[in-house]
Image 1: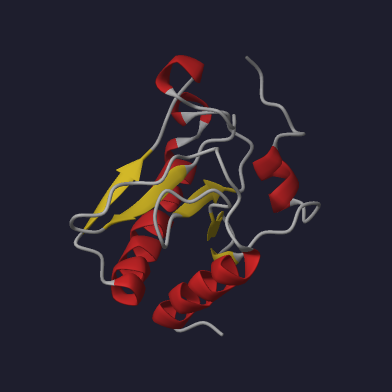
Image 2 (image 1 turned 90 degrees about the vertical axis):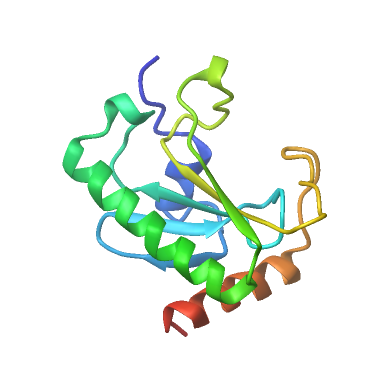
Length: 141
């Protein structure tokens, strides 16, 4: 499969689709998942056009994982979860549904199961609040 420049994350990166952004640098963008499995569920994507782990350069992958760690620390500060799951899928058989490499940061809370992903869009006001909490933990307005 070749990279599809029309995928939803490519469109978010170009500003064609709105997103609740929490972090951005020259190489990456992090934003709230619109169908979160838990409160604080955030996605981190590289700006480089890469379908999966195998298509991303080592330098871009390094920047992606550094941004993912930075955002994960902020999520831990903002939401105080009991744990955190980090997920990254490669190919449809592995569960990848958007073919632009990305990491899911999913806060986990004791005694609380995950919500089903890809079922229902979250309330936009709630997502905006969650994004603000993470930005505040990053020291961003």
